[in-house]
Image (tube, rainbow over all chains, first blue to last red; front, side, top):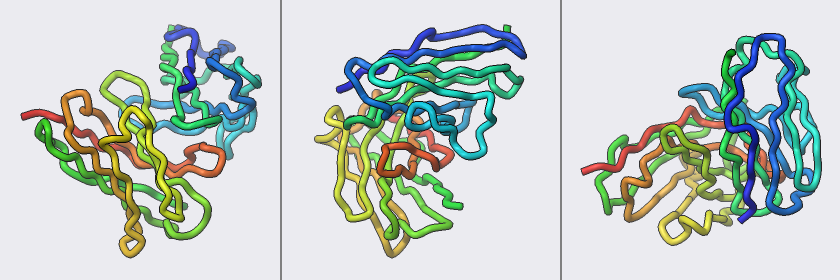
Length: 107
Length: 119
């Protein structure tokens, strides 16, 4: 199985801050890397697919980059609704696997 | 807009079989190139892909659960189902159904249903 490791596991930030979350794969996964946002009691919501493509309807303050084994999700200017948990997921090979999540909290 | 809705018992006894159904509206499960998927999340923990069934009926399961999992399609009801046998407390989780594309991305999800394994 491909292991996905996110860092940090938790992050405190303020509205307006720029934040970056990192995801590392245990082997090269090309750009088969996707990012989801999950709020308490809700299903995950796709933000970024194929490492850097913005899902329709997602604000442009979200961006993704990377290829191979190292990827980042950046939020350029945090808004109150962005405080949530973020997961990366690889679809290079089955079993599809997720990172452990990054909990983004209000400072 | 395709919508998915999970249903099934919220409580299952240890050693029994967990059965969940995902009802799909706004589109036919027999059309297009989609992977109808199940994903679960224990309380306070991360996400685990259980498996999927393609529109053609071919399946792919997580090896960690493969011996206990069956995913099937019911075209007549526009539904797909999950069966997980010999459950234990470790199978207690919120179970999500989702629709995936060729790239393994899930754009549409159900709201999730909590299944507790307890006697």
